[in-house]
Image (cartoon, rainbow over all chains, first blue to last red; front, top):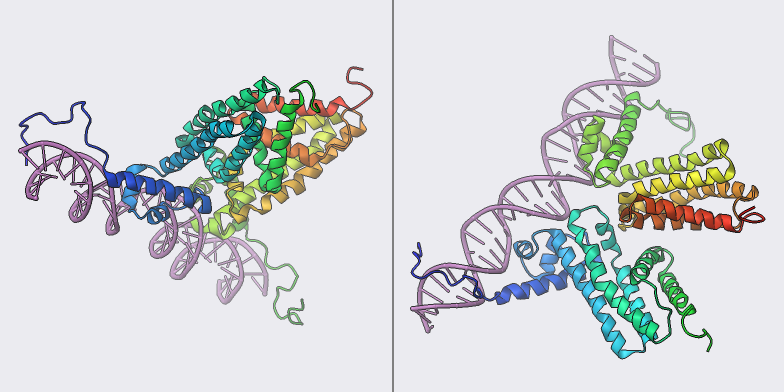
Length: 205
Length: 205
DNA sequence: ACATATACGGAACAATGTTCCGTTTTTCAA
DNA sequence: TTGAAAAACGGAACATTGTTCCGTATATGT
């Protein structure tokens, strides 16, 4: 059993073994299950519940995500990516002004859904410290491109920082939990109107 | 409700036995210990740690606070009370405008310190649902009295709702965690300047 | 001083995050 | 195709922490 090296081992820096198919399958199942469970039971849902829903053992969960927070982070990043990727898609399908407001609505939904996660984010757990920077890294460019396009088209004024807009919406979404879902939408629309105000030659024509 | 006639038992509505001295002592010790532990380790600190710091057994903690959240709530209410009670004290010691801005600073400190608690508040646990109303019930009148006095003195404009101001500061305090403690202070000062703007005959003289 | 209500302390229980390791499955080369 | 090793799996076992229970200790009032 001592495998006395006949020839060195086939690892070196050449490509190692492929990722096992079952491992990949379980990883996908876990992410899907976690997303569903977090959405219904919140981010405090037991790991066992996610494992069961994914049809895998607990050990498998911890093989892929050494800590519970790693699973949360993975889901979060995935949803941030989805939101960011929506920007170019909307830009391709709509006029600049329409694309901008649709994306803002999309972003608002994301923020509202991530309510429970926000609590974890601010829990002080250092595991989550990387999330805000990822959030910014992905979403700021996404929004900025929409803003620039809208400004170039003359439907909003230029010079407004995407960062500030993202933060403002995130903050505004918080009270909308208690004040009804309409509140957040109205506030976002108001912000957009504010941007439109100083835009082209005149608001009315 | 008639609860049987006569005076069978010595309870009725006459005062029952005095609260035992040790019970009161332990209650006080627990509140003090909890406040200290929450401040250093956050609201997720283990109950055992608080019990130890207070010098009592775990059973005693649960006698006074049947659930962990009850202890958190008790500490929260106590600190809300302290903040609310600061209003009349400041009003007595300072001119209306000065009292107002000092209290706002005091309130900002309270909000900033209660960061971890805010996460628990929005965790969805129904145990905490009563806190926002208590918060409003105590702090809105406290701030309103300061606002009214300042408006009467002509140093701020009238008609601004205390509720909105409280909410705005609470929301503004959140980003100040990352942007440094100065940020929150500046934002509050800005809000107050906003109030002063439409106040008397003119800002400058 | 004594009887009793009250409160205390901590062992025991339950839920949940995490680790460990024997077993199973996949991959790769002969 | 076959066999061995690498990789992954599953879940029992462990650690931590909220909560319950109950025998013991103590304050209160007569």
